[in-house]
Structure formats: structure tokens, C-alpha cells
Image (cartoon, rainbow, N blue to C red; front, side, top):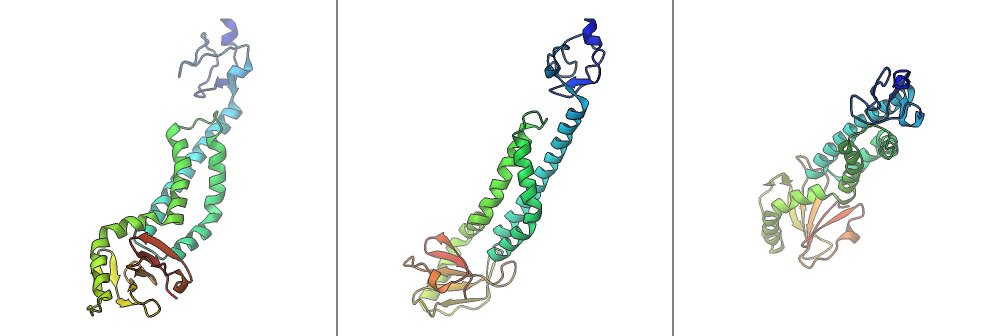
Length: 231
């Protein structure tokens, strides 16, 4: 197998191991077979290094999206005003938009030596981030943990009872709990302070959407509850 031993500057397509001076047609590192007379079955160092560089950069991008996912999860979990979340999304787009385009391109390049878990995270993490920004589902989870207590407070307000403020319900600090002057029977809990700022929880027993009195944004939490910014 003298021809095999004469291979110069060729590398395994699978793992990038040097094939120079071998007396076998199998890569000693990963076992992939190659034909020393067919350049298509081996690779040149320049392209191998390029693919390795692309892989390392893709791994860094996955870490970037991982950090962003944690940040957006915390922001939406504690009920930060979605307007601020949108501002963070817009300002960070100068970083994550090019990163997203790069990641999508690399993921679908089979010759780039990327672990399948990295490829999977590169696809799932951006979708996860967009879902949190678009639907605010982490806050919905937080709300569910406190729904029964908030229901009791809303019922007291709707019955005309006066409550001593502020009230602390889990992560919420309710500064005021009153009936809406524009919609009789609809209670509003102002949750200003702590981690939540400038937002209101509306409760409408008849499931009446309060959007016409809430000009900025509103999230339907179900069961007659709405989370929004009250003008």
C-alpha cells in the first residue's frame, strides 16, 4: 500500500485526523475508510480548519442564545413590563439577528463537525426565546401559582370591600385594588413596585375584554384575568 503512504497533507473527512504516511485505508482515529487515489474521500487542511472554525463559532453562538434564553425567561417570569422586554429584544437584535442567520447556515452544513445536540440547541433556543417574547408564557406560569389568592382579592374588591394596602402575593406587591371607573364590575390590581413596574392585573367576572380602555398592550391570562398597561 505504498500509495497510501505517499498521501501528503490530506485529512479524514469525518474527524480531521492526518492521513499522511498510513499503511491502511482506514482513519486510525475514527475508522472512516478512504481511497488514497480519490481526493473526494479525504480533505485538505485548509477546508478542515475552516470547518473546525465554523464549528467553534457555532458553539459560541449557542452559548449566546442560551444566555439570552435565561435572561428573557427571568424577565418574563417575574412579570417585567413587556414594553421593556420588547426594548431589550430590539436593542439586542444587533447581536442576535446576525448570530441567528449564521447559526441557521452552519446547522445545515453537514461537513461542519458539530455535535447533534449543538445543532438541536441552535434551532430550539431561538424559537424558545421568541415564544417567551411573543406569548409571555413564563409569566402565565407565575400567575397560575397565585391565581387562587388573586381571585379572592378580586372578589373582595368586586363586593365593595376596602382592603389594606399594600398586599403581598408571592412576587406581586399590590399597591391598589379598586373597581374600574370605566367598566363597572371589573376590578383592577395595580402591581407597581418590587420587580413589576407600571402594570395592572384586570379581573372581569364576565370575561369582558378591557382592551378598549387599555391602549398599550394586554395579555389574556384566562379565567377573566388580563395583564396590561393601563392608560
